[in-house]
Length: 292
Image (tube, rainbow, N blue to C red; front, side, top):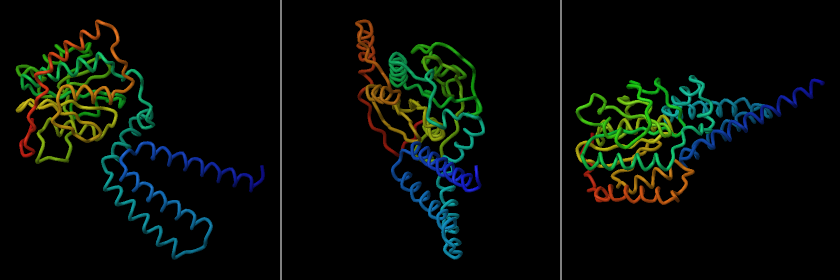
């Protein structure tokens, strides 16, 4: 292979790798305004590269480099949470999470959804605070939490969830981590979010904090003061919601849910609906109230 052939191959690989990296970034960005910022930034970088490679314009090159540097610093401040999460995933070697390929064992089932909704509805009726983290593919590990809690490794059930959040137990103030159809740990202390500090209580800030860092996990929150149900997903909190609305959101977020077609499953679903009907009418809270 001659020198020019090597240069052309190197150029082709450079373009392919850059295009692949850009497509990966675009596939991971879901918010429209963030996508616009990313497009503008990548356009500036591409333009700067084109000027440096094909045109001898020293002053223009300096100006574009200065603009790219200023934009890089601005985006580093604006996206500090996302960049921190990226470095954490790279440092822990979780490339499958980074590439958006969640392992199948983290997929919940229809039974899992019904048990979570049933437990949340009963905890809400009794005004017992709860925080349930459902891992749908983020591969959450002990180092992702401020305190990893107590290892449970038990089959998920409504009664066990309710008992873990009983006020006379030492684990009720922490979160419960659920993966698939298993309860992994309890008493987990989550990192808090910095948004809405004056508006939300500790449980809601913890739910926002973990879902900001990991977009393939969701968090169910039950307020101890009012019994209000909430659901955090990708750093956003939907509240207040009814038990039926919670079930709809869980089925939508979990994905690949199959309807319960056999009579036994239908009977279980009817029983669940009767249990949570009394929780469907939830008074909307005043935004100035804090919910723990």
